[in-house]
Length: 85
Image (tube, rainbow, N blue to C red; front, side, top):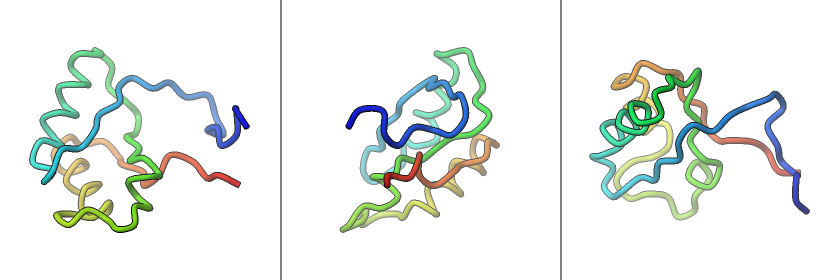
């Protein structure tokens, strides 16, 4: 039902960025989204559907993507958005 799986604390989405194979644009696209929103996020979440994808991306996995983002942008990346019960 609607409303299930919410974040535990108040949160604001400042941008939603989709990855494009093979992931070369991940850092520039995220940096552009931050610039356009004029807000620096506290954390970046990789979506639960990306983190738990099966089959996964043939070019990279969620942990590698998180490291690329953390190294390139300097903001902590969390794997997954929230748990569904």
